[in-house]
Length: 419
Image 1 (cartoon, one colour):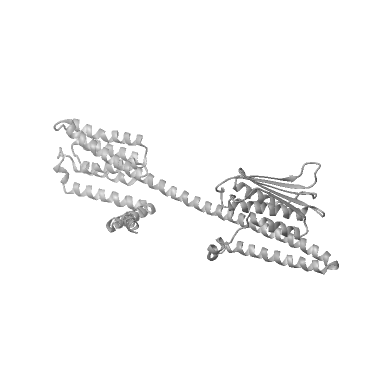
Image 2 (cartoon, rainbow, N blue to C red):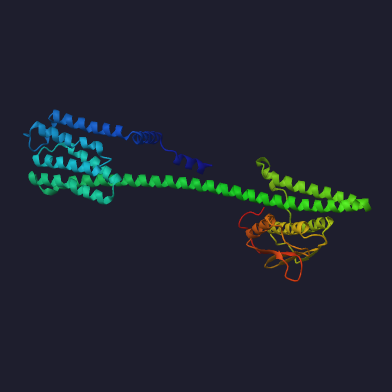
């Protein structure tokens, strides 16, 4: 609990920091909506500041030549401030114009402070254009400085040039840092978007897999039990005329099979109810110990089945037991539905150290009608969960009938849940 509190406190920014972040976000949002407004305000600020310096004569305090005409100072002032309005769309053109006026500013000895506005354009170049362009911009801005140093030398050249170069370098690096930060933020936003898309896709895939699993269970439960009920009903109808006791037994078996099918369906449908998820998870799934009951039900429906078991199933995982149970169930259901009259079936289950092998054969005409292969698809899907192999097809000539052979290797976990 204390660790969570420390993490929460560390992740919460200071109120002042949060307030500044909100103001920054609002300013950026306004700039994205109305960039011209911000450009006009910024340009107007520097034009007014430069105009105050010109009108008040403050430029004479640092000028080398104070006898320059007023019209020249006015032109230089406007020439190095008004182009700032187009700094985003054409930064290199704006810089070239400013450098031209800056060269006149340095050569004439006016040394107007408005020349520093070039640093804003340099920042925009570092922020938006390639680094090669930034290098050429630095060279271009150095020309007026060199010209002024040659025209009005004061002390050593490094005292006049190096401070300017350092200023250009710092502004350029600041633009690169802001650009890198923006690129990193955009990459994070894009990554978050991709993760959100992947999460939605994974949710859809999981939902589709769950629907497939439920459909497979519904097919196995309903298909098998209805086939057994149909067989019992047909047998009971024929027995009713000759042996009422046999007909009563068939009706009892139909009731028992129906109740079993309803119980399995209720367990399966409970999984879909969120409030009953925990209860549904406790419901037992069919296992290998239930094969005898399954085969007895098929026999009661009128299909003679001979079963043999080799080895012990103690170490078979529950998921594999369910797969074996469903494959045997589906194979016997197909035999009852498609093999024809007078057919017999055989179920052989062998447990070995390398896995479990199952063979279900019948002596009918074999095959599955076209368009009704959902059961075979379900068997293959269940087998694939445990990297097993399954073969379904006619028995080798001249033996009549159909066979299903399943092998599941020893494994500790399926590729996905088989429950």
